[in-house]
Amino acid sequence: MSNRLTNCFDRLRSEKRKAFVAYITAGDPSLSVTPELVWALERAGADVIELGIPFSDPLADGVVNQQAAQRALESGATLAGLLKTIQQIRTKSSVPIILFTYLNPLYRFGLNNFSAQAHQAGADGILLLDLPLEESLVQTQEVERELCRIHLIAPTTPPERLAVIARAASGFVYYVSREGVTGMQSEVAQGVSMQVQAIRDYTSIPICVGFGISNPDQARKVARIADGVVVGSSLVSKIGEWGREPDIAQRLENFARPFAEAIHAC
Image 1 (tube, one colour):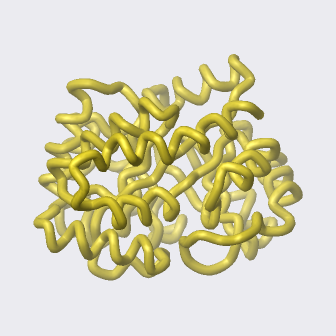
Image 2 (image 1 turned 90 degrees about the vertical axis):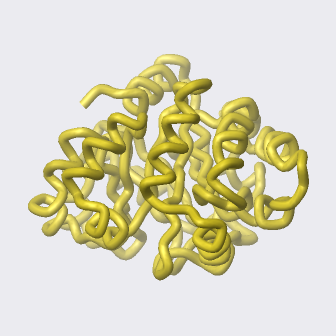
């Protein structure tokens, strides 16, 4: 599959640069502000944007992202509204967009309808957190025809399963650097380098590392190992802090830029 996401990683690889993947929750503080935040992250140097689809039971997320999802839902964010928001983003940007979600919102929306409409709106990939690979091969075939299907690999994934997941992924493999939920951490988890190399034995697509990357120094360390670094909770926490500020987009751009510089320097 060739789309904005795969083309982005091809370009970065040719430039010998690593990807800054920035996660925010769509609709936090509102869907009307979300495009401004995406454009700000792109100006700061983000290569890929992950947009979290707000959900009432985000079991893989820590408290920072849970609160962001709640704020988004309270502001009236819906999946249909998010797809319109992506269309608005596309009026000014061609940055690759990944939708980070759980199955329930897509199932209720309609998997076939979602696939076609997300692709048409301008999304490039999807990360479904709570759907096992064996089920996804059956349940999300329509989704996978239109969008890159990013899969998670965890520190506890056994080697035989790691191989199957790595071969099934498209766009990139998302390596979860630590056990547990999303959230800021004081140190990079041990063993990341060894696990990334183990994944490379089974796939040639890029490997991005996330969960717990909290500051530019940590991002730099991970970028030396992986093809991309996912930064989420640090950005989301600032959005929660600055949600009512009129210059929230500029503040986010300034905060995100050191992450981009650290990752791109590797």
